[in-house]
Length: 219
Image 1: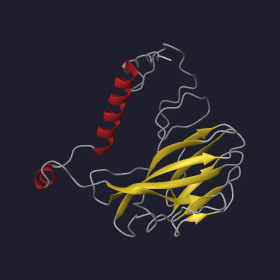
Image 2: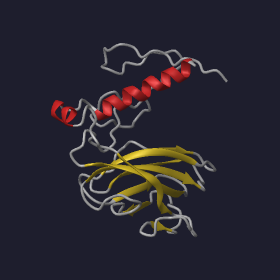
Image 3: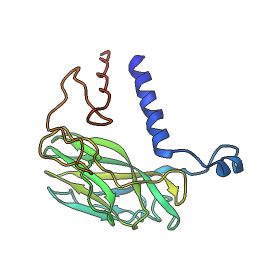
């Protein structure tokens, strides 16, 4: 129960940080609710494996696995119920499968520089899925990048945010990095050392408060 409460708090805190404060005129016009997110029936719009029979016909299919350092670009606007215009961000569920080596996958708008942050992390033989919100403010093409080995990638669309909504999508940026020699977006909080059990981490500033240790989970 304690772990569930921690997870719920993290979810609420993340949601509040993402959406921010809704302007008073917008709250008054809609009784406190702004119709920003448009949920869709999940639809498959990318599948690099052959023979997808339940996919959106406008999608990208059967191109084969992404090799190390490879990428796949696709144009999601107009696919799976996403409008062709007025879209600020799209909400995707991305899955890596048939993986052959430890790797990561990054999903981002192709008009933006490739971020250092990853969306999926896996080892060979794993099938891993994660949700990603991709900004469509700067271009209509989305890129999937695979760092190592081979991996088939599957993308399902879950919904979208319109331009000018309370949610503003950003290109993912790394704020903290404990591994040596790897960068953060602003050059800060590159500690170069892992955080051990029960050790503090100064997440707010170099002299900021220590992060509390993660509570033990019940099996």
